[in-house]
Amino acid sequence: MVLDKPLYTTNYGAAYVGDSLELLDQLESNSIDLVMTSPPFALQREKSYGNVEQEAYVNWLFAFCEKVYRILAPHGSFVIDLGGAYQSKRPVRSLYNYRILIKLCDQLDFRLAEEFFWYNPSKLPSPIEWVNKRKIRVKDSVNTIWWLSKTDNPKANVSNVLVPYSERMKKLLANPEKYYKAKERPSGHDIGTAFATNNGGAIPSNLLQISNSESSSRYIQLCKAVNTPAHPARFPQKLPLFFINFLTEPTDTVLDIFAGSNTTGAAAESLQRRWIVFEQNLSYLSASAFRFVNANESIEQISILFEKLLARKETINITR
Image 1: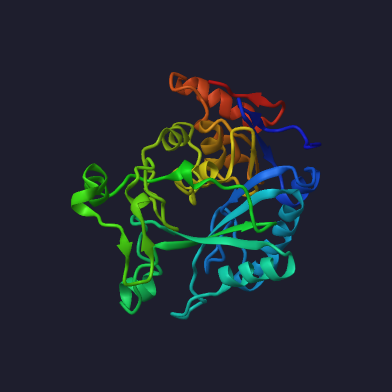
Image 2: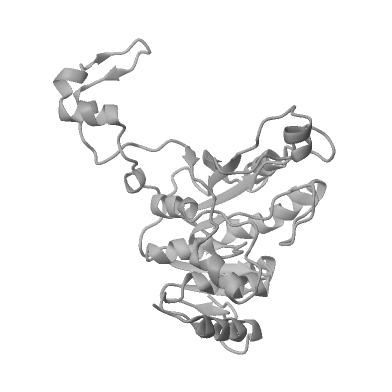
């Protein structure tokens, strides 16, 4: 890799300030195992972190994805989180997140390995006009997540993301003769005796229920302490944790091209994966370093670190 000097590094990763369109060109082809990102959504109103008008959004995002295709390893995965949106001044949904999916598969030969849906039960009702005022639409609390790949068989291991068994399944495993009989079901499925085997957990569904209600984390507290705004559109760390566990191994490299507060890097660091992130907003990326500092660092030390990052005179190494 021939990337320029990073803003900061950690035990496993490096954070770079700059435009992803330019930084992606500096990465070697077929070098990244997982690209996990959540780009600015095509919303009706302009946000502080920067977003693009709906009409131009698909072409804008496609330009980044073209470069992602080049740097993604043949066995790698591209996971992209896209929130839904309404068309301007109409109670009609935008199709932008589906249009970008079709364009990526038709024009870049990405494969849709599987679609996921992130259900955020703590999401506030929106848009206010149609949900709260006129009461003609329900709360939008699901994001579409496209798991894309360059081949039909990207690296994946569902055993790494098993979920706890239901209480009913626990009873079945404890006493299979009482609760279970091997036979063909009305649906035509032939359920054999192996169904009652304890595999350490259940296979998760493609509906991921993860609350996004971070309000008192150390990252938020430290942003307040140094008087800098926290990134307003953070996804919960459990989201990238799921996909990093599912789609990578410890020696792999994870990339986020719209890092924001660097939740992806923090998740990768906790799983001992190498990571690279790109973010063009210096203040947001500087504050993202708070996710990696020692718990015993004083506010004075944090403030000094933040000022050094904003100055960009040297790469700061942050290790615990």
